[in-house]
Image 1 (cartoon, rainbow over the protein chains, first blue to last red):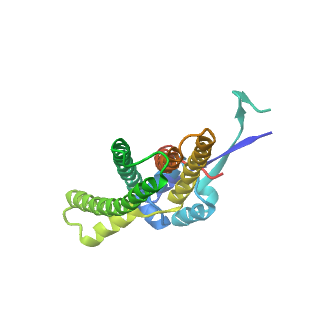
Image 2: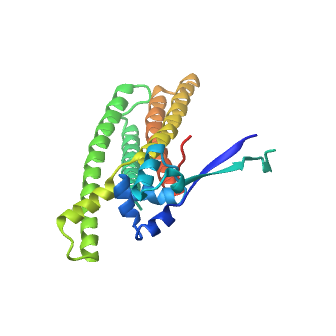
Image 3: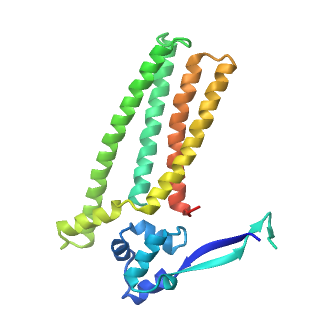
Length: 82
Length: 168
């Protein structure tokens, strides 16, 4: 059975609890552009494992607290795979 | 719009302008009888000239764009906070132009699209020879697909920046 894995994240929530850290501040600390942080937060880009660890390190939490994996059955030809 | 997106748009505009100038230049020369359909040397000379102009223009335009971009950031930072110093402005410019893993992934995936178009163009150029079209047509197809490949690569970059990109 084919499954689709999509990466979700809690970066917005973690930024809020880190004294409303801005996307720019997070970008600088993680060594990427603000554009990339925006894309990750909006789940338009899944970061590499290294960057995921760097982001988790910025917040001082485990990677599993920042990123999660949403697993769904892949939909093909309008029908859900069984 | 990010620095990378703006830079891509500038690249598209300058590329299109250069191609339009080439087309009008070549058409004018064909009508004046300076370029024949079977003599490839003048065509090759013209194309090499435009490739050289294109490379030089791209470098100059990118440098000018970078300067204007830096000035625009400095102005907007001063408007936002009059007390900000040069170091803060410099830091802001560096933060905006930094190239990271997402930029590299977008560049790589877009280049696949550009290469695919160039490959199809190469086949089309060979087909034109098989169909007994003049050699100048084949040469112009090759030149045209180099431009189209680069153009589609740039559009793909803009698409990925807007819609997102994923590994795999």
